[in-house]
Length: 210
Image 1 (cartoon, helix red, strand yellow):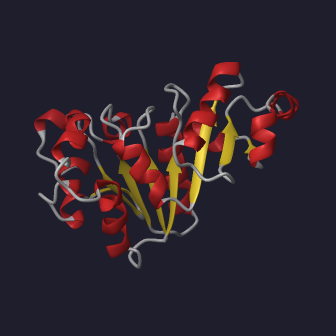
Image 2 (cartoon, helix red, strand yellow; image 1 turned 120 degrees about the vertical axis):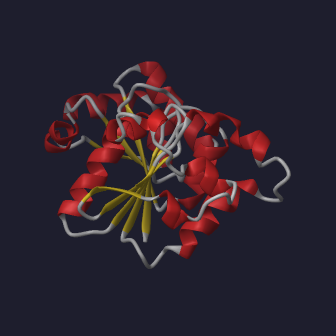
């Protein structure tokens, strides 16, 4: 199983939309996908579950606290995509796992157990470098960093990489102009030195999310 994490130190850059779209496209290519919402703001969860408060779902929080098995948390959302929802109480997960010896590797160990059941795992993360985001980065084979073509969002990539993102992470610039992509790279010697790869998201994926 390959694990793809959508991560950014800045909010509002389409992490959740990208995670949902990537999961859908992979399923349409015939792959079995596990989609995990690890963001307490739970945008991906609210996309799939309109009345989340009125239904008792097992979430990422219960999974990490070992209050539920992974199979108990799964919600089928597309043909070939199983989804694990999040909830606001995930904000307290660092305190709740404070007595664990190595809480950063709990998610890694859980995913290892289902490695042969899925082709891909896609993880949506919070826009800050807390326990959940760092845990997701540890699990990742690929890290996609959506960003805006502006100075501060691009500089946020540096904070993300220094906190554990691999130096060869794919940086998806969501504003689509090849000239603009080249310009940002040229203006950022740090990005060039890290060997980041630049691409633009497929418009069809954006249309699907909408």
